[in-house]
Length: 174
Image (cartoon, rainbow, N blue to C red; front, side, top):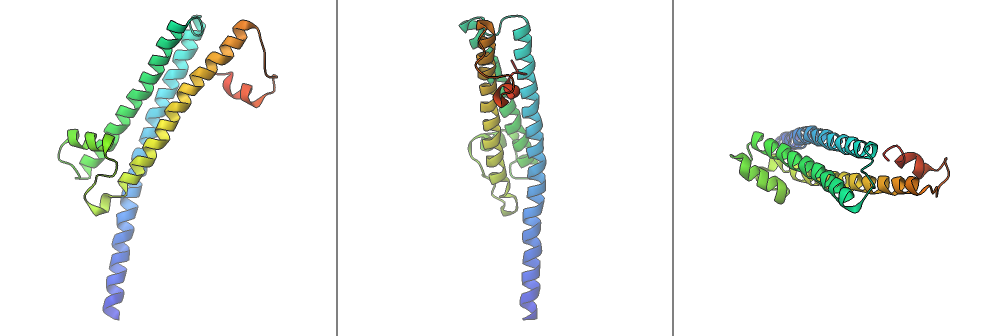
């Protein structure tokens, strides 16, 4: 019985380490990707405000399409940088010898680690990717919404009251 208790205690310590270290490392990369997306969002807000001050935002379909393409490009570049961060982590953990294959696996095959002690990185990366794609969709939606409010201002129409929650959230962007 004493031998089994020692084995169970060692297994529990190894399991805790196998969960704790990848969790801490993965959360660190997670925070870095949030920062990258925050930078992309700041760039989009500044671009939209700049184009609005110049009078170009909402002035025509071609200009709006060009602005939207830039917004989507900012989000795309943010995703590429985030994939690179996860790939660098996989290389540093010894899961891959080269950055190229790590980048490919990070972008395509979520959870492709072979070492059992780092398998928790796969679900963390998948969760991170889903959240960041949601943030990208929110950024594009915010630009669309900004055009909506800008269009209402240009037309001189006010659909919502001054105290409306929706108006209070989205008007600063427009």
